[in-house]
Length: 214
View 1 (spheres, rainbow, N blue to C red):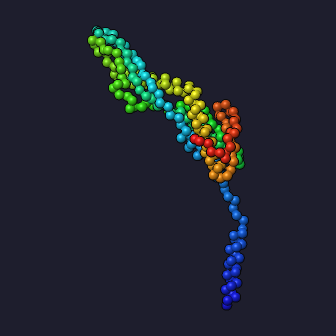
View 2: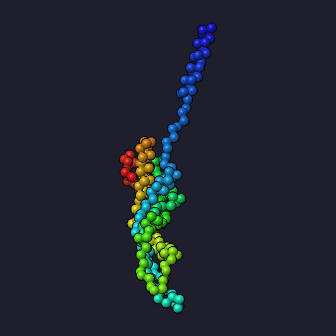
C-alpha cells in the first residue's frame, strides 16, 4: 500500500516539474505608445499673457437732434491669454525595435481669450462728452475689444519665436518620456524627429540612459 502511494506522489511531482520546465512565453517589454505621446503634447501647451488695448472712436451723428455732440475716443485696457501648441492629431510615431521616429507638426495658436478679471471700471477710459450726449454703448465696447483680439491673434500667430518655443517644449517632453521608459525597461531607444512642415529629419543625439530635465 505504501509503494502505491509513493508511486502516485512521484508521478505528481514529475508532472509538476515537467510543466515547470516547459517553454516559457517571452516577456513583453513595453514600448513608447502614441496615445501617451499625444497626451504629453496636450500638457506641453505654452500659455502667454499679454497686455492689450482696444481703441475706437465714436463719431458724432448729424442732424438737429445731435447738435452739440462730439466725436468721442475711448480705449479699454485688459489682459489676454494665448495658448500655443501642436495639433495632437497630427503627431505620429513609428517604433521599430529600438528605433523611434516621431513626426511633429509645427506649433500654432490654439486659442486666445480675455482675462475677464482685468476688465473693470478702471479699464475703460474715454474722452469728454459734449453738450448733447454721444453715448458709448456696450455694443461699441464689445466691437472694439473684438477688433483688438483679432489683431492680437494675428500678432501671436506670426510670432515665430513663441511658436518654436511651443514646438520645442513638446519635443522635450516627448523625449523625456521615451528616455525614462528606456531606463525603466533597460532599452536604449534612438529617436529620429521628422518635422511635418518641412519633411526634415533630425537624429536625437541624447543618450536614452541619461534622464533629461523637463
